[in-house]
Length: 109
Image 1 (tube, rainbow, N blue to C red):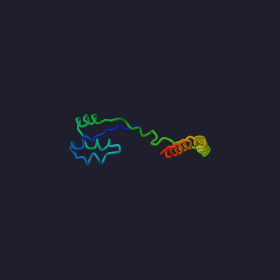
Image 2: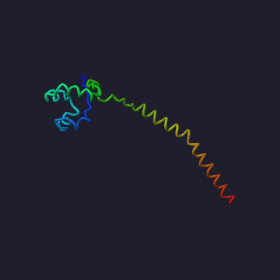
Image 3: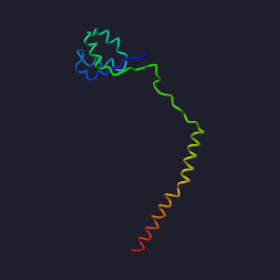
Image 4: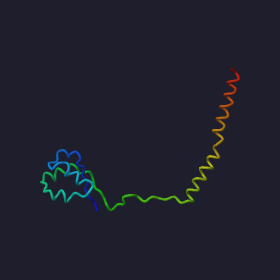
C-alpha cells in the first residue's frame, strides 16, 4: 500500500486546532482523522504545500543481510594472519635502523 507523506512541522504553531491534534496523528495514516475533522477546501489545498513524498509499505523494512559462512570467516582470518607474517619485517627494520642510528648519534657526542 502506498501512502502520501506530509511534513507539517512548520504549520504546527498555526494549526487552528492546536499542535496536539496534529502530533497525535504523527507516524500513522491520518487520512481518516483529517477527513473526520471536516477540513475546508482551502485546508486541503494548503496540505499540498507540505507534501514530501510517498511511502510504500509493501517494500521490506529491513533489507536481508548476508551472513558470512564459517568458511569465509576462516579464510578472512587466515588471509589476515598471512599478511601480518608477510609484512612484519618492515616495521622491525625501521625500528632496528632507528636504534642503530641513535647509538651512532650518542657515540659521537
